Amino acid sequence: MNNKNLFDEPCPIARSLTLFGDAWSMLILRDANAGLTRFDDFRKNLGIAPTMLTRRLAVLTEEGLLEKRRYSERPPRDEYVLTAAGHDFLPVLFMIGAWGGKHRGGGRLTRFLDAETGTDIEPVAVDNVTGARIGTRAIRIVKPE
Image 1: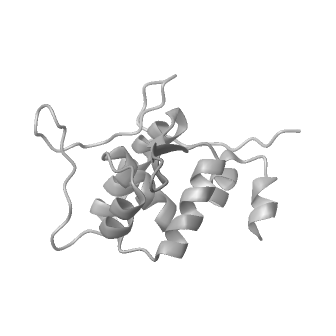
Image 2: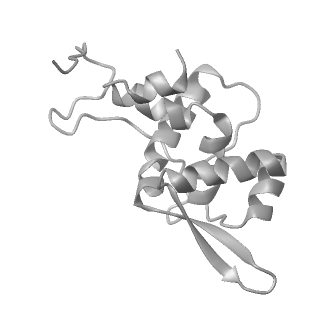
């Protein structure tokens, strides 16, 4: 199945994977949520090739997760600032990280701390309607008719 087919799927998970099925995109959003905004800072922190970073930033901007803003006219320089959609992706990243710590851990792992309290962030996914932790109850998938 190619990405175009996934984008047309009624499943929001499938549609989202057309954008986030790429590790670089998620890591760029992780770093943007940590305060990075400039191309060189992303490149240095991620160790990503400039051409790959350019492509990923363009897609994240086109999809409305980042906004490109000019911060210097001479020489022309842009920064990439999170939009509301980009901020909304942070809990998803933390849930992926929690899963990774549990099932892909071992050795030394990066810690994510609450900036005010200094305590480790331990994300939990909870259904807002029932209050139940997601993953503790059976689910049913209902496709649109």
